[in-house]
Picture (cartoon, rainbow, N blue to C red):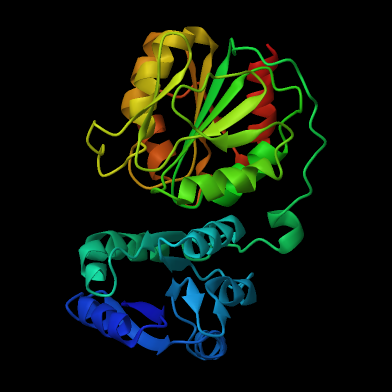
Length: 343
């Protein structure tokens, strides 16, 4: 059984490159293509593909316009993202709405060839997740920001680190929007994203979280009642005085920068038993090696339950290694985090 793939792409050159790219793959068949929103919606409706690659910026709209039309279809969409400010904003919006994942276009059109392996891996993973994808309707995707309770700034005594990847942006939005305004800990979010995208993602979280969330900055202290998102292109590290340093000298870790493992190895000795690590949906095993260090210092590790994961890779790796203190469903995650913070 071949994966039926539909390509939505404005550029004729990139569409041609993508089709040639997939010709040699015995398990993938391109069943259709479109360059505009209207044609994409009609084509996807008639051909019912297994997976769609979706250009972020289209001549008559954006990929988000296409995505919203298939809210209950279960079809996974992989965004093909430009690195422009507009491209990053639409990509993060699409991920918040429930797009499966994205692949950045690097130096298009020919540079698209360099992301071949990443794109193929995500197409196959998306196919396995077909049926679990649910695009979020607007009210759920963009809940109103809760009133922020202004508290005196002080360096945190506790920390909660969320490590996540594929399928996680809407899940993270749900979690942070349901945390208490009196969050007596520092929240550190490591979501696998490149430069530019993490700033937009942090800004989107700040609109719904009851306490401030921003992209991490060099020298910033980890304050209670404050959240930071690891900056794309850097590993987020923590000094002994609980301040952040952004490491762009250490190589990408299994292709990732930021990587959760690299953050945890510096967080664990600073916060010790007052550190909670939450590993959520995502491909691969980021967080597992770091969790071993966290456990050695007395910290806690929660893994997301398979039933609510889009991709069970990262939480599954934690559970197989027997590093979890709890297995928690997405719906219970905010309460589980608050129990740790308050006790």
